[in-house]
Length: 155
Image 1: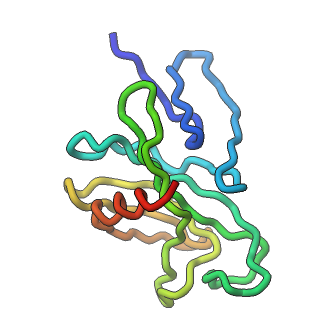
Image 2: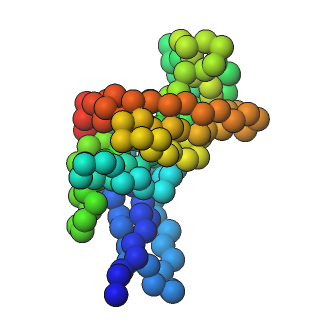
């Protein structure tokens, strides 16, 4: 019989065997911010592991140096997380925090952006579907190699 597992928290990566009474409430800190899971894990091609995307809430930079396009007290940033696809599901790489550039200004990011899904279009291309300021939706495609190279730059 096969065992079903679920990612219950992205960092430290917590994978639990699913049972009828398995309900967990967890909070973890990464770089001083609570990191929340965004997507179901994606199996990467060629045995490279699994990909997650997490997000965290950050206070607005009072200097205005941060590239966010809307004034507010909070902004969202994301991290890619690559982990082993077999128990004990060790985290291999965590990307630096990032935001997706605003459609009208590549030098800025939307304040509220939330990656809702990620799909492998091919063995070398990833599509991310995300919400913008709780009003619009968008899709961006990225070369998988660029995502993995970026992820390996982080912790």
